[in-house]
Length: 273
Image 1: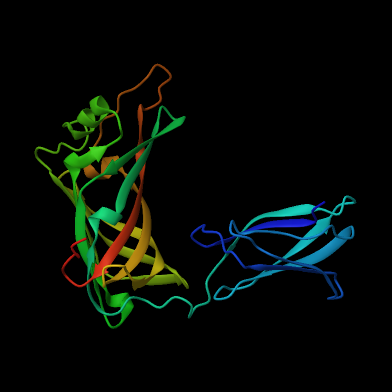
Image 2: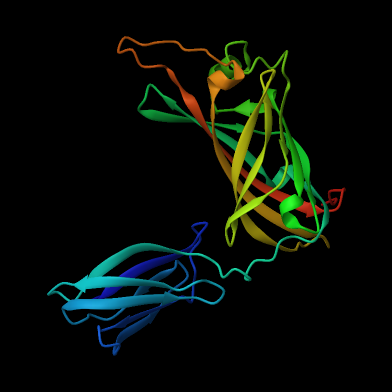
């Protein structure tokens, strides 16, 4: 039988193998201890019924404590716990230019369809760079996406998205974002304000950015990884196609979620693989 179960993940959602789950009674006496496996799951032996304290620790991460109530069966679950990294656990990339590697980067847009389902579109061609300043907050960035490369997996729908009803790629072939700095919100999360140019309109936009770290790659270079998200409204960019159905619900939502997983290579040249 199991006791207390916890799925232990990083702030980005990755499992943390080796994280330690410790359970004590309210007087501080240890009742159980378990180590998370490869999937980040830690399971203790059955515990005495009552109210106890659970503490999760992992190297390089801030500990998390929870009060748990154990049933008469001796078991319960904490669900998923996300651990933030220690403030000094993630160092920002070295100063200088960093170039987006399009082969290892993705841009995805998600919109609601008929208010009940999601349509996901990827853009296959993107490029750009990040210029890291000695003061990281003063760093700037630029990204460029070819609008015609939109891909939902259905050719007829992709053609409609490329048409004048939506992206109008013949007249507006590029989608660009220029970032003007960073503002730290957590040890590994930042806000990056900037301007998005889409469909012939330029509007202010702020990305929520999670920094994944940097390190060497197999080709002799150094890479850094970022995940970014934001919400945009189609009307802000004059994309006002609004076909209606009988229930009065817009066929495609006016709010679109944008997600970017970006891998950058240090320097101005991409390696030859």
